[in-house]
Image (cartoon, rainbow, N blue to C red):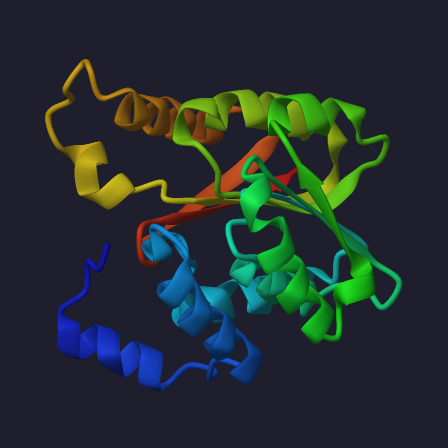
Length: 213
């Protein structure tokens, strides 16, 4: 997931904002206790998410794919003081782990957890959003987009993670590789949909910023 030379990547990280202590604790415990800790956003991308959220100053955030809550807390740093972040994850076993760190943060009361399929939960959310972060199962990225686009306020931002998919987006496609196929379809959708303007950033595994017109 690292496309820059290691020395240059280290320089980028060294000259960016440092990771807060609480997130360092969350990372350590995730690696100690949770399967697939590589799913964490990580300190550099976390600071990118935090910065974007602070620039947007959203009153409402929707996150698809909570995992252990790292990105949730990064995005919450930019919330309006009366704002809320709704985060959805299908794995109920992670609920208490997430809540422990949410409640240790300054944003515990602003973070609302939803457990289950995002395809079922999103339509039931009777609200609109200023910022959406998509970081869930890749085969449903297109479905998620179609569910959230009408719930996104004008000028609202969609952040989409893993859009370079370990570099597989520029390799010959294996027809059995449903995740890569889905990411390719999703990237084309973001580029072509007239309701949004999009820029794909080569940050870590690829992060797309799409703004609703």
